[in-house]
Image (cartoon, rainbow, N blue to C red):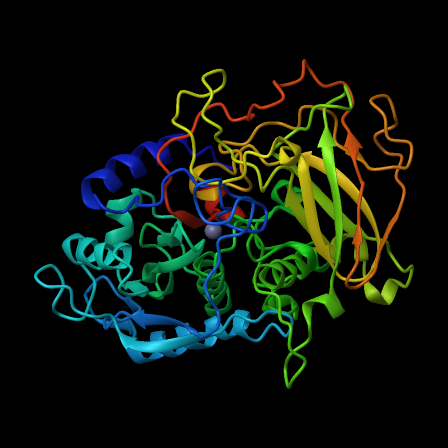
Length: 478
Ligand SMILES: [Zn+2]
């Protein structure tokens, strides 16, 4: 785990210098599922900000190579990179319960005078193309073939990719434009070049992760205790339940463990944002495949709702060892209060101005809703990992707060003094919501003001990025 502060200082300084128009969408209200939620004067209050998917979402691809070597020769050419972009978007498009579709609209369009040569490989060009994205004109997928742009933007050789929603429509609540940038240095075939080489399968996951943000998805935290183990050696059970939208690339590629590319949580959330209603070929209606577990997280007083607590629903094991450990493999999550603003704009806990995102309905401060496949679950609460801040943030409160109480399970006798390990089960049925799965935290400090966010401080909103953790060998070498 790494704290983001030094990175963020760099990020903010360089973004301010290099991408003066980059931060058109400041102060997001983010969730374990949707990246943005509407506020009272922005989009639809409390509703996810999503693409209009009545037609496919068009994207445009950089004209340069995906990856180049230090001597300038090409490691992965443009055609191969473009084919991978198309193919990686399909991972989201092919989710049968989700209605989002994408289309390749061709090359990134010129933005004279800043960008005219087809290959986005200078900061001037990136700035021009980002500006055009901010204007809502195009959705660029950019290859930073030698990592030079990432180096300038982040000053951190571990940043694999980032995505940014460029423009939102405040009246319709729709995403208008977005972009993603991939760091080709991880695919140059050289592992000693101040960074680490990824396998093709691992880098494919970087594409898919960034395209998840492009589609409007936030990070998710499930099986976070994999971080206590060694990189690239996660158990099959842990990996199966680990969202592809987990903030950092830590485990081996899912395909290396013969797992589907998207985890249950990824499938659930893309489907919740873009619920399929049809039942034609390749389609399954969302309501026929998912139910919802809903509740709120409360301080020990049982009255005040707590925002920013990660809630995980885990499937009960069927006891058949051949199926692995379902409690780890089949899990879904949301962060409490994800529809509520992370920044209400009072002066008690933050000096920042109010966010335009997120509801001000105080009944939503601690509410969570988790889409789940039908089955029987436990529900538990935990802190969002302290390292998941800024570009790696999860949920509405960034930087995250510790769970104000103890980590615990929900049970039918919830109280501020119940056993944290006492759990009851929740059975979810397709098309139905199981409500009132409310968790009263144990031993919390004085409750927050009833109309107060937990947030302490928020910098300018950076783009979301995905980082690579060092392998065990690299840690030893360092
Ligand atoms: Zn990310």
